[in-house]
Image (cartoon, rainbow, N blue to C red; front, side, top):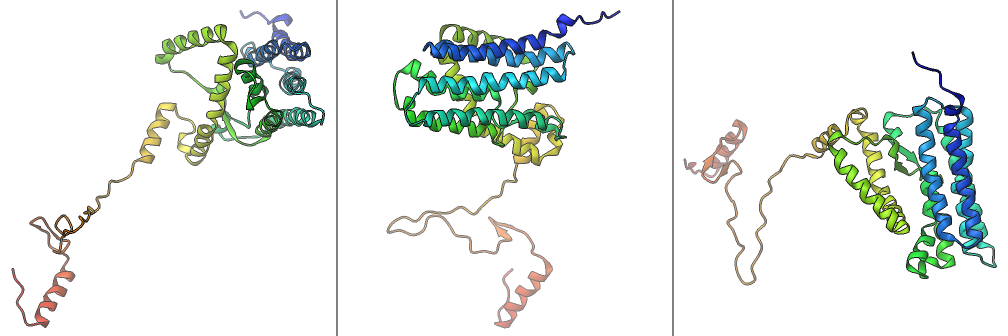
Length: 319
């Protein structure tokens, strides 16, 4: 007999969401004390907790409307308001352009979350569940901090200039509200054969995060940006091939290979010219149906036409 779930267990996903909210707000407090490494780490912790609360809620069958609304509010503060304030505290200017960029980023994050909640009730094709429309909130919040990460690791440079940071912040804000498809890790399924290699990779990633946390985070963010063209290409390919929507990844590869296969067409070779000499190679002057001593009989209509042309000039056709 299955026991009823206790209220404390059902509150666990919401508790994790509140912890993510506290981590995001703590990033602002760290930035006020100019502890930018801790500020980046707090937003990273918020991203990890944000990826766990939804999964735990589905595993425990503890999903609720309150949890969904709380998750959106937490994401708006942890990945919208907190990164914007961290960047503004780091890049304080007298003209107010930094504050405008921070406002644009925070507003775009809220708009992105509002659109995401609206699209949850819209019927979509099966392949659309493998993608996000635009950059998701945790990735966008961390991507906005990439100039700060580079400055902490590499020192001052062109990436830390006020104009570059302003343009970068607005560009990431535009990616948040764009309709560029990005891959969703929620639908990625690893085959059983790849379990051991994946565990080794996880061990290496954990070691890199422990030893060089900001370097590992910066590399991960750059790789995320580089995956966007592949994601767009995969989205368009799936949209044009409905037969690949509900099949495993191995069968999709077979469909892609079958579609990309083309018949091999032989072309007459092109012989280069040599300066001061004749054209290399032998040019075929015989009819197309006589090639290399093998004679193929042309259609009857062509044969009769050729015989008439011989008779007109009074010559006999050579056999």
